[in-house]
Image 1 (spheres, helix red, strand yellow):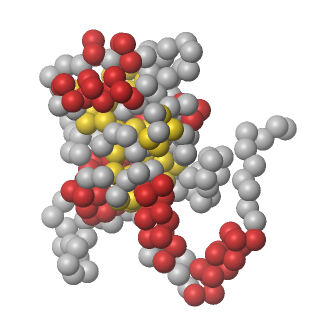
Image 2 (cartoon, protein in one colour):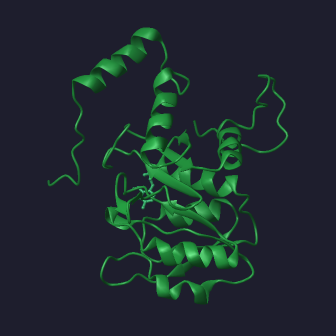
Image 3 (tube, protein in one colour):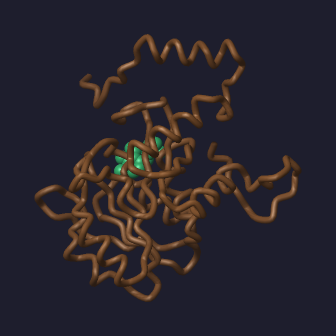
Length: 227
Ligand SMILES: Cc1ncc(COP(=O)(O)O)c(C=O)c1O
């Protein structure tokens, strides 16, 4: 059998996991999660990082945080891992497919505009196999039509487009840290953004919409446990 990827786990990983066990900080509240959020977001050129349980939940949380819902259309590439489309469907929205271009297999940016309707809420480019999409025309279209750009950078940690990190160009970037990814936490994901409001909303939705001020069991809307 030829493995797709072999995780590289060394002394540091063993040391940190051992530290979690020794200190009893085995859930998402330990010091490492916040440190990872801060450092990874900064690495992507973003102010805020919000970790999740997977790349799939990062995509869903991103869309939920910008209020994607029933009746909305989200433009995604026809060729991607299925989680991109599922995240749209989880929100009750409709994925609208754009064909790939033959050179990079990324979304063909020349075919996006034809798919924009008055129901379109966001464009979700996927940097497939870590190759960044041509982001300038995507950002331009989004600006012209007042759309969000949610990057699926699940496979693109560290990839750069014109000096900017993939995932750090649109309104939100989504990453996976599954075991076959460039950086792994076993299972896990993260959204990165420069928008404080989106980050705050994502943090609330990720934690079952518990009130921020006080740990009381009062929930004003439906949230998720994606910590
Ligand atoms: C492009 C893309 N999007 C989303 C995902 C979903 O990530 P996860 O497996 O962590 O849920 C993956 C992971 O394989 C992916 O390759």
